[in-house]
Image (tube, rainbow, N blue to C red; front, side, top):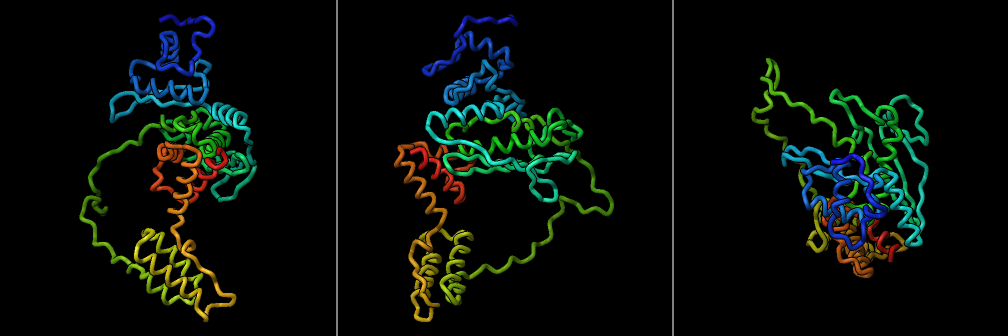
Length: 347
């Protein structure tokens, strides 16, 4: 294949209605390192991602990087961009939607747990924190140096992770924060800074015999200590002195796995309302409603689905999992509220 491809002007432009790469585009992608190990599905997904994000693979704004997968015994290709690509998307979306977009000061943290706004230590930081501001909302993310640093087989950092560890860690935190602030626009593509660690060598595993005086790791484990007795949340609610104490017991029971509508939560709620209405309750008497004892996670999910229906989003579950890496059923209140605020702001 020639190494001097000079296609005519515009021949590499990706059209919005395009369903496959043209021969000219495919030839350039092959020169960029996308070899025959790539699957048609990976190529189709990459084309769709380029169209959705508006990033140009032929201007090196977005890449399709292949890495050996031992389980599949072939290369698996993953879309990547640089942090500049994320910034381009964020700025473009903000301008098109008429919204606002900015940052708070970057913070770094050392092993002592103290956050500073400039990293002056000769060694790498333990973590970096970036907060993205979008339409008046704050989206913060923390990246740990130990989780993202690219390393040689001996464990030492390499490339920019050795010479600019604070900047690399901050880029990873910025990518995480931008993906939270722009989940629909950045889903499915990761930055090169985040994916550098994917090339780290796997730790070596050696088999050896048990040495004298060592415990045998394959020996039958000793019986586990008896588990602590389970809390009787209903009894605690009846024994509580105030409705506020019952509220906390209700939250503890919900966190322990008692879902909304269960007899346990229903009885605790009734006890709480009764204590609030009791003549012996502190003056002024509390006013307790069913909503105060609602499951906060279930309530947040209900509000999110209502907002999605209002704005006409019928791919909520898939979009949420792409943005946060887990299904809605396993999400926490903060993640559900963040997505709800984002959809509400876009409405």
